[in-house]
Image 1 (cartoon, helix red, strand yellow):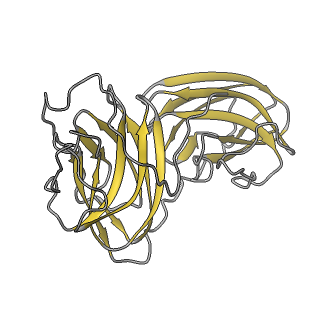
Image 2 (cartoon, helix red, strand yellow; image 1 turned 45 degrees about the vertical axis):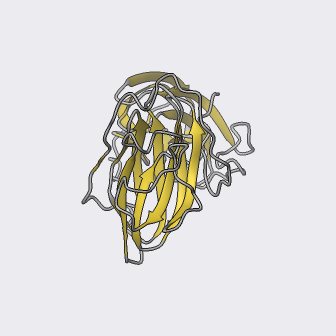
Length: 281
């Protein structure tokens, strides 16, 4: 199974100038955000020449960014604490700013990553003003920056999953998105079961049918923040591999009686809530 690699946690990588298929001096862009939306789990994208996010504010504490590269070249994603006005960080002769410069602190980053891939970054943020940006040479100057505000507050209330109806069905419809798996049935009768699943997220996801008696959400994870699909106490019956947003895929499997989990095992996705229990009788 192909897995999208997620960049989680601290990275101390130097920034390099990337050979680009487009010249960032050719076009000016602008970034987009939902400025008044408050969330500590944020999705978004980078592309020429903008940064887009699902929220423009968060409460102090852990904040998670799931960011896709929808551009045609590599980009990076930096979380920078600064009171400098959005887009006004002074640039050097190399058309990027010093990340050790006065009046700013780079909290963490997703370093340059490939087109059509998604990365996840978790950071702990104090109250204050920030910019979310790309500092590859020329990218910041051409619009790849967005303001972000962290407010005082103990935490953001977790998003509650919709209760799964207790209906049994062998033709199940549902969706995957950040960060849940939602289906219209709690179980099925033994035999052929068809799952019709839509990716309603902002990044790629996958859909696995796993037979296990391990409690929902409790499959042990490895250092890469995903579980071994050959691990003890579980059997991966089949899967829909990673697929694009807004697309619908169908999977038909023959299931024996028992307990199952329907889930996404891309790094970090299971831990963040992409799983639901399913019982076959």
